[in-house]
Image 1 (tube, rainbow, N blue to C red):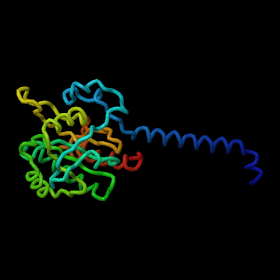
Image 2 (image 1 turned 120 degrees about the vertical axis):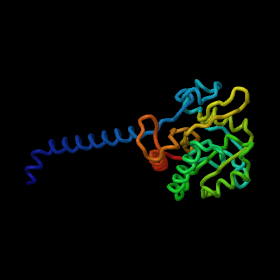
Image 3 (image 1 turned 45 degrees about the vertical axis):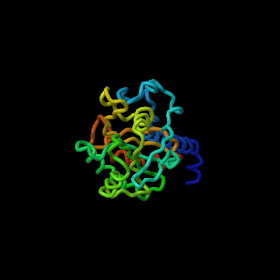
Image 4 (image 1 turned 90 degrees about the vertical axis):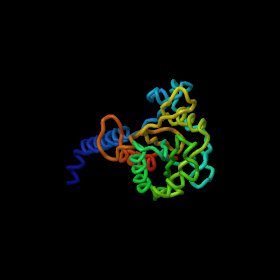
Amino acid sequence: MAAFFKKYRYFFLFFFLLCVGIMIMFYNALAWRKALPVYTPSMVNPELVDTLVQHQANKQKHIIAPFKFANQNGDTITNKDYDGKIYVADFFFTTCTTICPIMGDNMVWLQDQIKDMPDVKLLSHTVTPDIDNVAVLKAYALKKGVIDQKWNLVTGDKKDIFYLARQSYLAVKTGSPDEMYDMVHTENFILVDGKGRIRGFYDGTNLDTPDPEAKNVKQLLEDIQWLSKHESK
């Protein structure tokens, strides 16, 4: 037996190296396939992007701008509270009767999935801060079963929310041309990594139905888990 292996040692060595090479190629192919893009304004529907940043294509430059709002408990929430955290952002308003209830239910589902993941949080911005004050957001949070440590519902100056939505999150359309800073939110859930970069847009009204046009919320959860495991925050 020893003589047999000695005689064909170069063949076995070649076969071993070939197998290792094939395994590496498969691993790299799978890793590449799962890689999440880093979004820039130039990659997004222009209707959702402020003209000042619309043509920006530098992936290192586009990060979520600093912000400062009040949450459902009246606490000040800033971008520092999300530094190094993977988080999902969206835009809504409490009196919405169309897509918001579905988005809210799906965000509750997502909260339940990530509640034991310390590096993941949620952030919902009202687009009607004149109506959705702290007390209103608190009532909404209690109704939805919001976990304060995981999910902030924020309100503040409408102008600040408008510019953050259109210049940073790239997720809100302009409303009536007669009203400055009028916002029409979309169904988008926005995935942001620990460096403040946008890594994906998802249909917040679709929990798990396959859709060739947009990723659903369960796919969002898969991407959160992948980011948490494979990329440093």
